[in-house]
Amino acid sequence: MTRLDTFKALTRDIDGINKPLLALGLFKLWNLIFGLVPLFLYSLLVNRVLVDKHMNELWPVIAGYLAVFLFATIGIAVSKRFSNRLILKYDLRIKNKLLKKYISLDNEVYSNYSIGDVKSRIENDSAVAGKFFTTHILDFIYAVVYAVALAVILLCYDWRIALLSFIFVPVSLFTVNFLGAKTKKTGEELWKLQIKYESFLHSNFQNWKDIKTNNLEDAQLAELNGHYKKIRPVWFLNQLYLHLGITYSFFTKNFITQLFIYFIGGLFVIKGYSEVSVLLVFISFYGQFFGFIENISNSMMNFKNDSVNIGKVIGILNLEADKRPYRRIDGTDINVENLEFTYEGNVSFALDGISFSVRKGEHLAIVGESGSGKSTIAKLLTGQIKPQEGTVSIGGIDIYSVNGESVSDKVSIVVQEPVLFNMTIRDNLLLAKADATDDELIECCRRASIYDFTQTLQNKMDTIIGEKGVKLSGGQKQRLSIARAFLQDRDIIIFDESTSALDSENESDIITELKSLSSGKTMISIAHRLSSILDCDKVMVLKDGRVVAFDTHQNLCNRNETYDLLFQSQYMAG
Ligand SMILES: Nc1ncnc2c1ncn2[C@@H]1O[C@H](COP(=O)(O)OP(=O)(O)OP(=O)(O)O)[C@@H](O)[C@H]1O
Image (tube, rainbow, N blue to C red; front, side, top):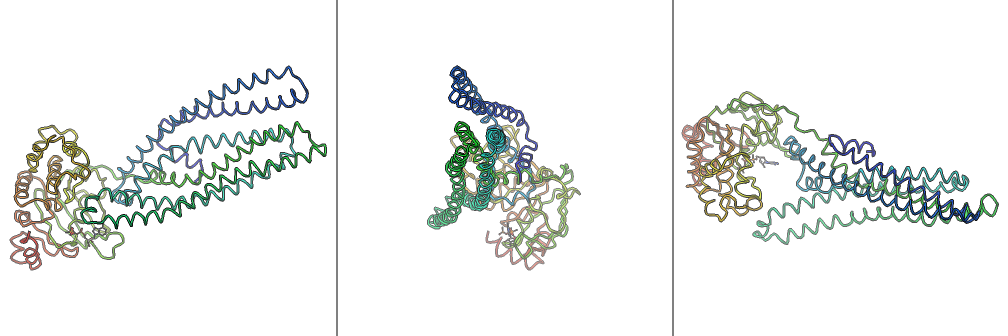
């Protein structure tokens, strides 16, 4: 991607950037003018004062130098301030935009990104993108304009020496470009390894308790070292190419070109084509000129390197948000027809030709052996994944033709491992309904049999429950998550083994509450115990991703062999 394309992609839909960028550009121009004036003063000093001995011009030259110093200092200070402001402003906006984009993504697209990837893009890559405007746009344009201005001045001074000395420019640019390509390639490899490493770290921090209890520290340390071993050589190569580029431009600027000009210039002076004073000024100008060529080369190399990170940001910005329309779903009947679903990378169906319906107010239990496809149905009914074949409609609306919000406004799901945040119990509940009153919070906690527990805590509802609710037992987490579903009060509630960690007494209390709440609501329970099946209107039995029976518990007990076996082995034991 060119700088212009990158600029367009990074500024699309981001307001408030153009003004500080323009202001910064003007101050760069200011700096450029006050950077060129000393060259003119130097030439006056050498030619008029020293060579022609016009001593009366010495004081104006000195005054000119002082004035330039003053104005240039002001220019540098003000542009630094503007550039910091621009970077901070952009950084905040781009992070915000990336987060919003992630949230608005279709579930399927969203699940393509690992935690390490997301973290790296939002934190590190966006910071690199934030510096793009100053480093790769303004500083680059400044260096190019300055270099062109100096090239013109050099040509005016002595076109022969100038033309000869310019041969180093393409050589330098080519070499630095070549090294830049290598830096970019290794940078990309490094990025891939780093996101794997970040994901590994993240899952370690999340599961540190399990790692300790299962004595997995050594295995995890070995894996950590494995990550370092892979990262180290690529990082080394990346830094090598980067520094080779920098060293090369330094060497050409300070040694080869200077030596060459002294040699050629000396020959020209000896042959009478030029003068010592001209050569002196020329060498001083050329030093500055090549300094800017060096800046351009470095900028080209750094742009290649940074474009790895910037590309990751643009990659997310260019993703299509969930464009499906929002539609209010009024009806509550669920109709599932001929669902087929295979997880990516798997060869066999997780679900194969599933059809069933649940009427408004009915309670359906889904049972089956482990791996028979129960949770996959729950994910499909909530639109988290899309089937390869078949349809799911709620109230006559195809749930895959509307956006995720339409479905989540209608259906809530309570899962075995609920998503809880390191916040207070109150805040975790308020996520479900931001404007819930205290009475509503107490009511939903009572119904989920968690209220009494909250009252035993020092800070009651304002107790912070730790990362992923680590300070709560499995059953307390599930009850909190059920309280959240009660608070959400959706028309359809899916319980995916969400009472598995509760004791029988607590489970039956919650089921009684569910029943009292369920008038008019449709419920689907991925059942764990006998108690959760007995009162259901229908039971659907799954085997290897297919429906093998669909009837009332009593009828199934009498007639269905699979159900009977499953029931005897699994549910009676529970
Ligand atoms: N994310 C995934 N990627 C690949 N395969 C998966 C994934 N999730 C589930 N599967 C596979 O799909 C099949 C159905 O899984 P599912 O989780 O729906 O079963 P289940 O009946 O809910 O099992 P359990 O009772 O053990 O929770 C299984 O063979 C499982 O290995």
